[in-house]
Length: 379
Image 1 (cartoon, rainbow, N blue to C red):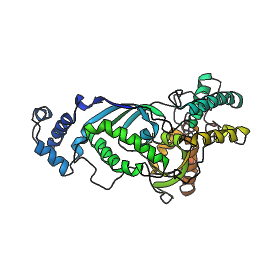
Image 2 (image 1 turned 180 degrees about the horizontal axis):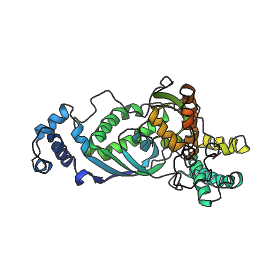
Image 3 (image 1 turned 90 degrees about the vertical axis):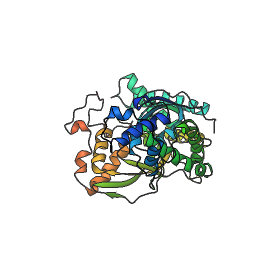
Image 4 (image 1 turned 180 degrees about the vertical axis):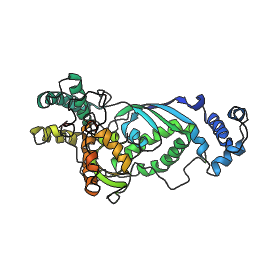
């Protein structure tokens, strides 16, 4: 595997322009005092820091005052896999560089060669096989969306990530717990993820507040065993999706996702094949190229078994957004497959499993698929 690109974590904004854990603790003290004091906020802000009070808040598990402190970090060069782990731990807000809308550049030489090859291939394929797409910029975007499957899931990316002081500390304590375990794992993905985690811990340790760890048995949700499949007012299911698709699924922060298989050390990697090249000679070439990358790295095109749980109303929201011509193809197909399984148990879901423009909802973006072909497209 190639060397990790150096990544940097920088605090760029915070609640009340706080710049240190001491300032943040002072703010949390005022938030906690609101519950028991007759004073107004401005008066509470004038009080001196009381270590006895803030220690009591931490030690008794009354951590909600620390949630009022939000920190915004700019993470440059962060490995994509670590970004995915962070984006699986709610609550948070993130804005991440898109591999659909930008050309990938900071990648290993072999991946660069294959990415460029397939980028050109997909531009030509879309122009020849998908006449609806007449805009060269649209063809370019679709090509980028598919060529990125050739890049490593540890490709450096950049994102703005906002979370509370409480959540950051719960993450820090959990990552400190799992890092040694991942380092000793036989799974290459976990071993490499441990390196990224240690880099994250080194750059956030100054915000570590003793006693602000999670007091329940809630653990990191990035990995999760299979759950029994069920569809009702709540649902639980599992499906095969690539790393790229899972990263798209993380946008739906009301739904829980967890990797439950596909990364075992003795497992043979299986890859997503874009439908535009399925059942053509290019399919074998696509597989061979991904296998070349998988010899020393983990491509974003590798398929995982992913557990998914949530409420029907949240899945309904997901359908509105993803059963659409603007959605990434793979997550559209994945959402549609889940909707069809859901409809077998709850027939009303079948009426929702259509593009929103066919359900009387207005869409302000132009669409070449005109609704009816949004779910039939091949890219």
